Image (tube, rainbow, N blue to C red; front, side, top):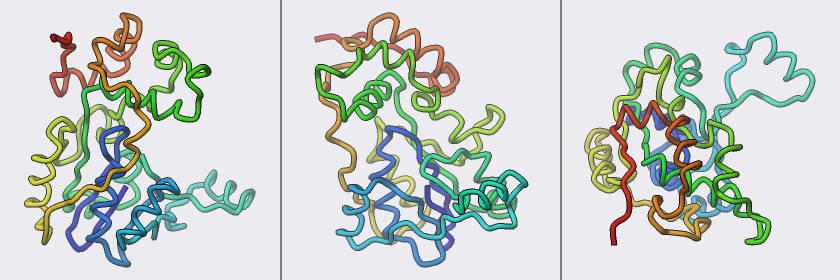
Length: 235
């Protein structure tokens, strides 16, 4: 997640939508006052090699702490933080009404059937082929937040960001964002987390009826909101 004060935007990072690549690219336009959350060690190395700013200002100010936050701080010594896939409702509370209303808020979404396969390979990337669970077993047990991005950009089931880009239309939508923010140059995306998915087949040839039903239930709201439809692969 990024909050940029110069260009007045909030980037809410969703899962399996090229979010890390977008986040790294946007870091180029951040300065010392902006909020940049942590990414994986491997991706942080890529960001450093590009000379862009890394994680900074992600500790949440103490004035926003409630009783449980203070107890946790006293017990563990760890500060409450902005984090990678923080939900819109939390960000709104922490940045305040003025910033929330005046900054351009955006994120990306992806066909949930294809996204589910990408998530499966990412989450089981440490498994050997022999120990990797069947995809339908994984999807039926995976936490909802790993399969659905809905809460990242909605509050009370209402979309609260100004723009939801389409992963399938990534380059064109990045150009829209560049123009909207008035960035001085085109966003150039590095490749991040792109090597974990081994099966690039169409989702209709990978997901069985059980897996399809699970995604249709878990992602029903975004399927309706963005008119995603199951399409069978045709050779």
